[in-house]
Image (cartoon, chains in turn purple, orange):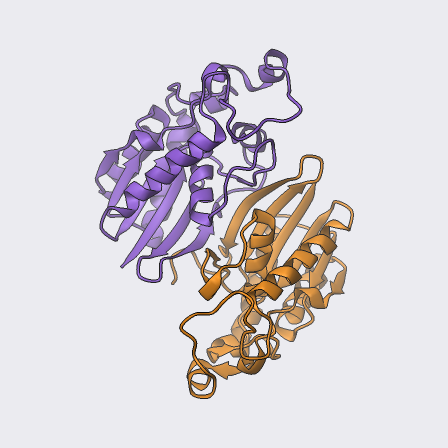
Amino acid sequence: MTYFITLLRHGESEGNSSGVIQGQSDYPLTVKGTEQARILVSYWKSVGTTFDLIISSPLLRASRTAEIISAGLKVPIEYAPAWKERNFGQLQGMQLDEVHQRVPPVDFFHPYEPLGGNGESQLELYIRAGQAIQDVLRLPAGSYLIVSHGGILNKAFFVIMGITPQGHYNSPIFQFGNTGYAQFRYNASSRQWAVLNFNNQHKPDQDEGLNSWKND
Amino acid sequence: MYWITLLRHGESQGNFEGRHQGQADFPLTELGRQQTKALVDRWKTEKISFDLVISSPLVRAHETAVMISTELKAPLELDPLWMERDNGLMAGLSEEEVRETLPQFDFIHPYQPVGQTGESQWELFLRAGRAVQSLLDRPPARYLIVSHGGLLNMFFYAILGIAPQPNFHGPRFRFNNTAFSTLHYNPGSHRWYVISVNDHFHWKPEGDE
């Protein structure tokens, strides 16, 4: 009774390459992003990694990544809106470097504060990630690949670790580069999670600026 | 910014024989030295360097640390804060010997000494907390910590805000021999970044359970 769960962030998207806050707005993969997904497929083939099912966010940058993997490894895909990126409210579509001009910095933001006026708070995102993990664990034990986004994958990590959003900038960040991934084992009889590995294909400073902001 | 790399020692004789080591002192095996060499070669290729290597004084960590500090030309300090859990009467015993000689418990609370006389989960967590504090009392730099699976798990608990749970429940952070995890800490915003966990690409890819 063991689950193997891999949380994968999509390949580079047009929004990533132009420095836009994407949230739930839809951007396709860049050529580089497509290539990243292909490289990952060859790597997984070379080490014999495969999955029983791919569960993907329906947003283009994730679904396209999932389709490339699905075709390469011959694994079926299901789409689940629970794995969509955080709703960034009115920040969606803004340039990262515009944010500080258009949105005045606050002394403190709490975890219940809707992002960008009408987006999801940290707590709401955490709750959605919790439900998404719950949904995976209602499936029979097996090996699942989740293709999703940096913000919500961080909260899925929190759910698995048993930590809650801290408000302001005080939550730890699990830094997912494009096609970075984390692999977990959940033993359904001992009810114990293990982090098997995280992000070990990637250079440390990849996408740092982007991720350090977007996970707030 | 602090750049912190947490490294578990190479395979030791105790690992090879499947023993509960704790603070019992076993040297590296030949394989353990090969793993360390592979890591050194990889870090040289990637031009990774450290300002300081801090190691547990237990020989399996110390030997690993000496090879790295010599090859990468980084100074080495030993600090007993980074030693593995004192596992009391379990030290050096095989699984079978533990079953034969020590009482088994249905429920283990976090304050219960491990192996009758050793450190409880809570005490190990507190020591990991002191290790975090001792590291951040130093100036921001690139630090390599050479230590052990049990203590490094509690280091993760201390920085992520996870408290020890009964029956050793709670998430486990896997550390294969010579696997490392990379963290960044920004003291200006009190923010921890987890960059990687259990990276052992120099030795074996993922999935070798």
